[in-house]
Amino acid sequence: METAEIIVDARGLACPHPVLAARARLRSLAPGERIVLLATDPLASVDVRAFCLRAGHGFVEEQRCGDHLRFTLERGG
Image (cartoon, rainbow, N blue to C red; front, side):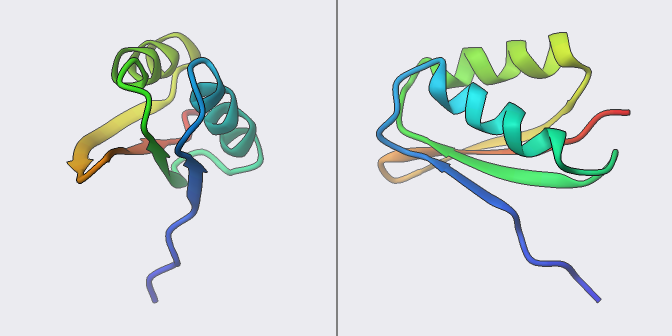
């Protein structure tokens, strides 16, 4: 059985707020669980990658979806 996506909608927020929203949600998950972060700030592309690297979370993918970016992140151990 597949679980529903956990969406963190940070569209319209300027950095660092998308990263802060992702961090808060990831903290509540078990290692290996994933979230989808939506953001419109173009700097999120750099900031989210750097956050994952520093915090030990997995950066799974980034997609452009119309007017926003869609990141898939995995909670690290």
